[in-house]
Structure formats: C-alpha cells, structure tokens
Length: 352
Image (cartoon, rainbow, N blue to C red; front, side):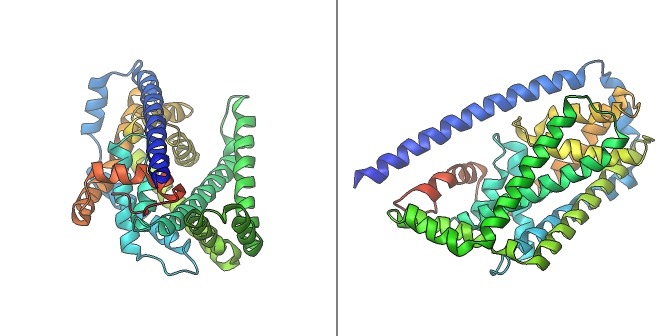
C-alpha cells in the first residue's frame, strides 16, 4: 500500500530538483545574453526610439499576434483528428494561459500546462494531448529548419553554424519520420506496449492514449492541412516582424523578417528566464546587425517585439485563468506533476 506513495514522493522530489536546476541554468543564460544585448546600447536612445513608434502599425501588429494564436489553435485542433477535439475557442484560451505561464514562471512549462488543461487533468487525456503537442513541436521544428535552409544562400553564417543547423534539421526530421512510422504501425506498437507495460495497467492506458494521438499522422489530407496551417502561422509571424520593423522605420531586405522568424523561434526554445528575457533581445540585435542596423535601433526592436509577443496574450491569459478557477501556483504544481501523474501506478491523474 505504501509503495505508490513512496514512488510518488520520490518522483516529486526528482521533478522539483530538475526544475530548480533548469531554472538556475535558464536564469544564468538569460543574464549572459542580457549583458551581451545591453553592451554599447544607449538607453536614452532606446527610450527616444520607442516614443516615436508608429502606433497604427503597432496596433496592427498586436492584432496580427492574436491572429497567430487563433491559427495555432486551429492547427492544434486538427491534431486531435479523428477524435473529438476541444473547441477552437477553448484551445485559444489555453494557448494564452500557456503564454502567460511561459512569461512569468520558470522552466517553460507552457506545453505541460496546455496538456493538463486540454486533457482535463486526467491521465489518459493528458497523455493524449501531450502527444499532440509533441507532434506540433516536431512539425514546427522541421518547417523552421526548411525555411532556414532556404535562407542560407542569402545570409552569411559562421562556418560552425551551418553543420550544426543541418545536424539539428536531420535529427528533427528523423524524429518526425519515426512518429509517422509508429502511427502507420499502431496495432504492432499497441501489442508491443501491452507486452512491455502489461503489469502496470494505468501506465499502459496512458501509453495507449498517447499512441491514439498519432492516428492523425496516418491521414494524408490531415497532414497536408497541418502543413498548410504551419505555413499560414509562419507567414503571419513574418508579417508581425515586418510591421514592427516598419513601425520603427527600420529599412532592411525582405529576407530579414524571415531570418528573425527562424532565429527567434529556435533561440527562445533554449532554457532561459521567464519570457526569454535577454535571449530574445540579444538575438534580435544579433540578427539585425547582419543587415547593418545600429545596435540601439535593433535593441529597441527586440524590446518592442518582446512586448507584443508576450503582453497582449498574457493579459488575455490572466482573464481566462481567473475564469477557469485556477491560480498560477496551482497550475504550476499541476503542470509540474504531469510526467509523474502519467507514470504513476496508483491514484488519479488529476493532481491538484
């Protein structure tokens, strides 16, 4: 009787320790990037630049950012095919709450929050939803590196960065191919899971749910729709980048907002402080410097893009979070226990 309790306690301690280590590493990296971003930047020039921003273009950029979240919700709903998905509105709400969590809490817990809320806190539901998010992230990674590969002839990169980029792209492509391969052999994979996990019925149930979530990758039309929505999402994000460049009067070639898309989307996935402070700004400065943009102006752009990316969705997330009856601390605890809740043999997956 005490064994499940002991395993739950040990698992909780391991999760907390890993979370603390990830947080410390993230804060350290953010501080390093923040120092690099601030170097040689004149803050009074940044403040003056931000006061002169074109408010009409800024408002348009905020609207585009909200459209991006809606498009992501539509794509996410497609990943539930052929199962009954949550509504687009509910998924949109969850995405804004996840952005709020990423902006104010350490360890980038947004994906776990998404899995917990969309899965209604139940083991099988959370496992299913988490598998849809894994598929989404793999699709995003592969498409980003495809865009990056198309940009290589037009952008000077350090010699060491080219092989690293290709190696990362190959690994992501292999992971996506493996997921599709498992989806095409679901029955065989199901029997393998029964053989390996038959002694732990609850864990087997969660694994089956995750396997169920791969059904969408057997449907060619669904895959084409997912690819199409990914293209729409990246196009909207590039438009957001361009609107903010125009709002600050930054004149750069058309390839610049595309490169900003790739660099920032990949860069903010590294461990960092809440909201990717420092990382976001340094990467903006580094990218725009390739096109001869002065550092003060490039830093101003990083500040503006960071605010537009995090502030409006987070404000919506606060409203939706209050309506859902959760607090940030309770949601953090619940999301942090997601891996343990899926893995545990006893108890219920609804952790809070």
